[in-house]
Length: 231
Ligand code: CA
Image: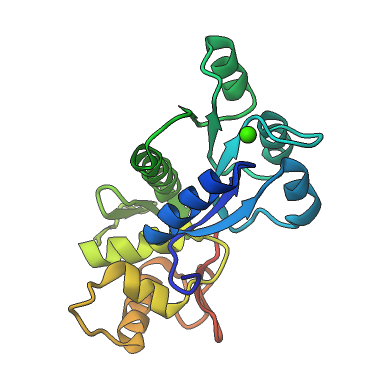
């Protein structure tokens, strides 16, 4: 399961059955899940948040740190979106959650389907925010599939190219395996090869790189795939 995921989600929930239910549902949707029972354990053991695309935090947690405090502490290091889970539903609690840096809030009990919809929505937002990014001399807008250069040159990307760019942007700053790119941008009925992915990267380099032979943005990480080297 961990081989072919689209994004990594940090899940902190002390109720074991709920945690397992959420994890299995997220994994079935193609996500990789890192799970913890306590916020204290996250702070002790999670050395880096670089790979985390989204957090799902229960508010009431055992130990020194609750979900709100965890979010505040992580916010100084990383800005991935956080969805809070809580049995509390008062307005003050919601305000407190948003002040702590929440992006969304879901009150227990909830349907797992609703959580999945919210997770997808948060990750879409993140991608479209990241998508209006500057890469080299171009401004890329994924929604329209257009890249516009400072000199006014416009390049349009097709749906497959948009999907690949979206995946690289979602994983910006870390390598994405060719097999993950194939999974994301081709259906299982098609039979592309790793070489097919390489051809798309060649095209991206021709568009975005000043010197395509020495790429600065679309980097090959040997044995690991391709990385879009944006901060
Ligand atoms: Ca709890």
